[in-house]
Image 1 (spheres, helix red, strand yellow):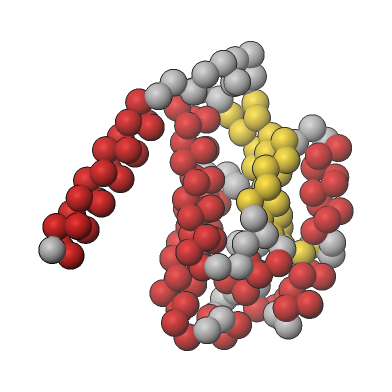
Image 2: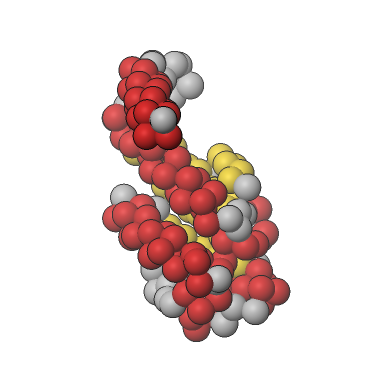
Length: 161
């Protein structure tokens, strides 16, 4: 019975995703050639981190599929900091696989031109040594100032919490 239930859930979610991909984007991107986004990334659950990174990838694919270019900066703060490290020493042992998946998503998004900035204040508050942060991520003194600066340069604010 459980197997049948899982199959039904899979097929339902697959058909939903298929249907969503067939929907039009709408007119929100009309007239735009270049899209600037600053993502306020402040989630701590490994499942939510992976979900949000996946949604960001999907959003960028939709932008690309509409022949638009973009500049995206992900400003990392809060509990997400723990998963942005070279090793999983700052997370619970049951999250080691999620840590690896987060790293892969960071590399994938970076290959699409996404820039990552991590707040040193948040790292300090969480007990994460700045030296342990992934090389692909730029550590900045104050993540709030990054978000403020990008918004004042015309970047759309996209909260992910």
